[in-house]
Image (tube, rainbow, N blue to C red):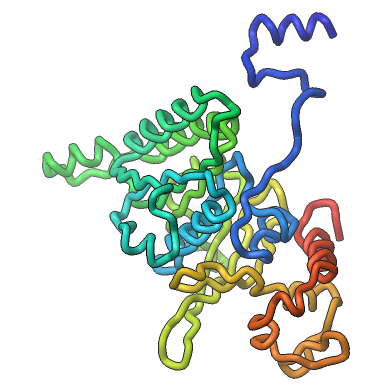
Length: 335
C-alpha cells in the first residue's frame, strides 16, 4: 500500500487516486421532467449526469433546441449561482428567444462557433479557466453544443472559398479528437455537456433505422444518447408545444431501448414536470386506466384534471412509489 501511495505521489496529480479512495457518488442535473429523469438515470429524482456527455438526437424540427433550453432553464433555476455556456452553431439563439423561455440571460453566455476546431479550442479554454479557479469558489456550470451536425471544418471552408467541390474526409476524425480531449476534462471539472445532433435514415437497413451524423466520435464519448421524435400538441387550433417520444439508444446509467412520452411547451413553461407519471404508475400497477380515466383513491379522474392539480395527486408517498417503479423499469439489475 505504501508503494502505491508513493506512485500516486510521484507520478499522479489531484485526479490520480487509489481505486478504493475514488468517490463514486453519482451526481445528476434535474432536467425538469420526472419521467425523463427516470429514463436517463433510473430515478425520477435523478437527471443528466453532472460530469458526462449527453447527446440529444433527432430529425429536423423535433424540438432539440427547445428541449436543450428547457434543461438549461431548469439548471439555472435550481442553481441560483450557476451559469451556462451555450455553443451555438445555427445562429438560432438570441436574447428574445432566451427571455421567452424564461431563462436568466445574465447567467448564460452564447458562444458562436463555426468549425469543429473552433468549438474544441473554446470549450477546452473554458474548462481550463474553470479548473484553475479554487475548487471552493467554483460555481455550478453546464455546457451545451447546439448542434454538432452544423459544425464545419477549417478545410471545408478553405475548399469552399477556393471553389473546390470536394468532401472533407477528415471531419469525423476531428469530431472524435475533440470529444476525446473534452471527455476527461469535463469529468474532472464536473461539467455536464449536452450535445444536440441530427439523425438520418440508414439506407438499405432491413428494419427502419436512424443514425446520428458526424461519425462515431460522439457515439463513443457520450454516456447517454437519446433519440427524439414528436407530434404537435394543440390548444384548439394553436400549436402550443410537442409531445415528444424519447428513447435511449445508449446509456451507461439506465437500460437501453426504453422510451417515454414527455411534454415540451414552446413558452416559458418548458418541460412539463409531471407529464408521463400517470403512464409510469399504470405500468407499475399503482393505478388503472379505465376508458381514459385513472382510478385513484376509488375515484375515476381524467388525466388532464390530474395534471392540472399535480400537487394534489402526486403526494410525497406517491412520488416515492413512482421512483421505485422507475428504478425497476429503467435501472440495470432490476426487473
